[in-house]
Image (cartoon, rainbow, N blue to C red; front, side, top):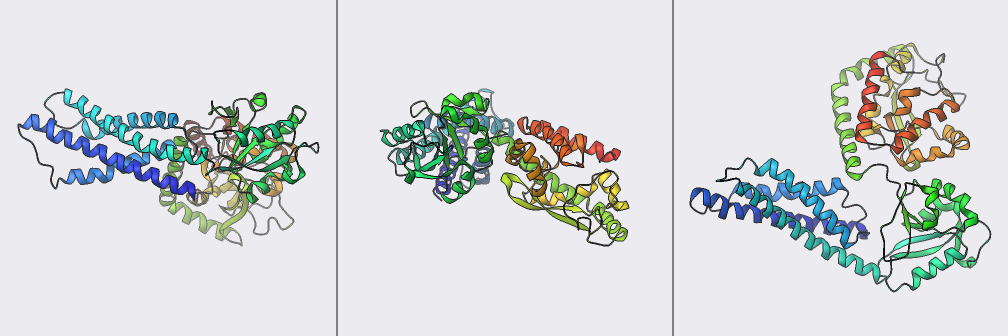
Length: 468
């Protein structure tokens, strides 16, 4: 709740700052730029452009900030980060407004363009930063005075963990860690039994029960072998993971330092895409899915009739799959098999599967059976591109042989994927693991450009009927 309140105040003051800066630019152009050109001051009373601008322009800025990820982790920013973020966003936004709204204005000379740009940037950057520094200072003061904090677990019960707890609790300036207890890695412990609240294998349950926001990994050197397993078990949780710098080699490329004055901790970064790209990716999902459902409605109608006439059973097939962060959802497909295809239990399909209907063979080869999943995308359960979602029955078997599979739950599953292009429908767990390798590569190289390439190749496979 506190986070939502702070976000509200940030949005509110960003809106006020954007309104002030746009009003300042409007008055400047009326009283100086246009007055010089026309030879008299033009009144601004009841100017519809002014009122429209005071609504549309602040909205533009709020959307720009949201796309950049500014309103994420609102309680965890320093004043220096506020300065950097505000300067970058102000420069980008002002340039956009200049080319969209200002460049086609009638002026007496080109100097007026530069002066308008400078006025808008100066007022916007100055007023926005002023309000943000007030907000940030208020938040930082609350945290440093131990009024606000983040529920925190220390993983480890050795000398390192005990010393870290003492350092954090006796620091003159609080870093916001509200320590709820220790989590055991091994049975050897230096911590009081009263402070040990569980073992590392119980972390998902402990995170939920104690509403944990931060986890600090402070293992002893003889416990390093457990670190990858611990990271795997919590990587899909909505928490911030920090660790002592001596374990850099275990998570190379995933750590960052963001505190030079407090305790020396490295933060493990699980983000797979910049926030602005994730924002655009979701926008593409919504736009393309809506467009597809509208334009392909005749195709939906024809396929529905074909499925219904071809065999007994429902038109659509729904099944529980595992999605983002391990949460289950119901996937929707056109039925391509007999209605009682899995009466003997979960089974994977093969090229010679006699459970498939004649229409179903065509649907799977052209991937048309996947079309209803655009509904899953609109519901936010899936994305256009992402690792294919599996059933828990098979996930358990995959993880037994390849624990790295858990990483795929960091992102939403997709209608198509890199692994789907290479392997299509897997026929056994071994093929599912082979397909997973391409999905892991996708995960580590996610970008909008890669998504577009995968969608393009998927369309080619559909046209050529090479789906498996």
